[in-house]
Length: 271
Length: 301
Ligand SMILES: Cc1ncc(C[n+]2csc(CCOP(=O)(O)OP(=O)(O)O)c2C)c(N)n1
Image (cartoon, rainbow over all chains, first blue to last red; front, top):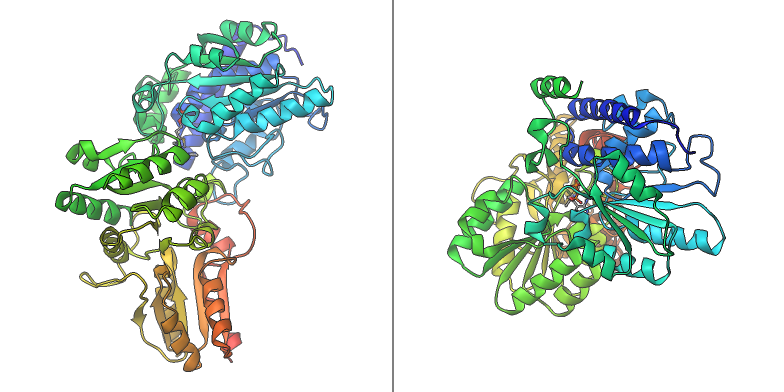
C-alpha cells in the first residue's frame, strides 16, 4: 500500500504517536520510552509509506513483514498499529496492565499485526533471514524489514545473520539500526565500539545507507533506493528520547516512566 | 534479594581482590556503587551473553573469582552451551547470578520469565544450583558460593522480599532449613516462594493444621536426607516453586520418593507446562497460575 501522505502529515502522525506512547508509559510505570521515541519516525515511515501491509491483508502471504527485534520498544509499534486500525485504540489503555491486551515485549498471540514474538535481543535478524530466504525460494515478492537496536548489535547472532544474508543475496531483506548511541547500562560506543559501523556492514557484504533517522525524506530515499541484489542496511542516526527535551540522550529514560508532572511537561513540548 | 546480593559482593570484594564482576549490560541502579569502589574489577561486556560467559571462564582461569549478572534467561538459556562447556565441563570458578525468578518480570512477557532455569541448570554435571528465598539466604549463599571453588548458579528474586530467617542464621550449600516445625504435613519451598509458604503455614495453623515449613535453597546438591526422613515419618509433602512442574523442586522430591521406594502423600505445586500469555504484574500472574491462595488439603485426608 503506497500511502499518498505528504511529509507534514507524517510529522503529525509521529507527534500523536509520541503522545500515545507517553500516556501508555505514564499509566503503566513501564520502562523503555527512550528507545520508543528514537524509533518512531522509522516505524511511521515504514507503516505509512513503505510496507504493503494493512489489517485486511494480514493473511496474504505476499504482504511485507516488519519485525521489531528491539521488542522493548513495543509501545511505539502498538500505537502505530492502533493508528492503522489493526486493533482498537482502547487496547493501548491496557498496555502492561493486569489482564491487559498488550505486554511489555511483543507476543504475536496478543494482537493482530504483530508478526513475531520477541523480547530477547539478537533474534530478529536471523528470523528475518529465514523469512527472506523462504520468500525467495517460493518466488514470493513480500519484503522483510527488521528493526534492530544499536546495543542489540553487540549480540554475535546479529553478525551471524549479517554474514548469512549477504552470502545468500537476500535482496528482499532490509535491516534498520536505530542508532541512538545509548543502550541499557552505558553509551553504545563506550560499552563496545561499533565504529566505523558503515564499513563493518559494507565489509559483511551489505548495501549501506547512513542517514538521519528522524528525517522522513532521508528515510524514504533509503527505503526506496533500488536494491543491488544484496541485503540493505539503513544506519539511522537517532536521539534516544527524541521529542522531549529532558528525555533526550539520557540513560535514565531507558528505565524511567513519566510521573504526573513530567507527563504534563512532556505534553506541552509535544503538542 | 538484589540488594543483599550486591551488598554482600561488595563486602567480599573488599576482602579479596580476586572478586570480579561482569554484566551483560544490566545493572542500572544496582552496580553504580560497586563500579565506583572497584573500577578495575567491574566490566560491562555488552549485550553479548555467550561471549560474556567465555570471558568469565578465561578470567577465572587466570585466578579471578568471577560473578556474572543478568536477567535469568539471559545468563542461563541464551548462553547455555557456554555455561555447559566453558564453566561446567572446564570446572571454572564462575558464579552466575540471575535476577527475576519465575514470573517476577510479569508484564514483560515470557522472554523475561524464568520457569525452566532450575531444570536446565541442575541437569548440568558439576553445576551447583542455589535458589535463595529471602535476603538472609541470599547473603549467606553468595558467601558460600564465594568460598566454594567451582561453577555456581544463583537464582535471585527481585528486591524487597521480607526476611524470613533471623539475622545471623547460617545457611549451607546442600542443607535445607526447617523454618517452622509441624507434624501434620511438610511444605517445602524453594526460591522466591518462601514468603508465600510462610503465609500458608501460618494460615493453616489458624485452621488447626500444624505444618512444617522447610526452605530448600540448595537445589543441587540436594538435601535428600531431610525428604527421606519425612517419608519415613509418613508426613505428607507439598512442594511449592515458581517454576515449571518439569524438572524443578517437585520433580526432585518425586525422584527422592521414587528412589526410596516407600509411598508418601505428595502434592506438587508449580507452573504447568506452558508459557504465560497472560499480561499483568507478578502478583496478578501468581494468582492466575494458582500460586497465591493456599491449596486444598483434601489429599491428606
Ligand atoms: C539477550 C538480551 N539481553 C539483555 C536484554 C535486556 N535489555 C533490554 S533493552 C536493553 C538495551 C538495548 O539497547 P539498544 O539495542 O541500543 O536499544 P535502545 O537503546 O534502542 O532501547 C537490554 C540490555 C534483552 N532484552 N535481551
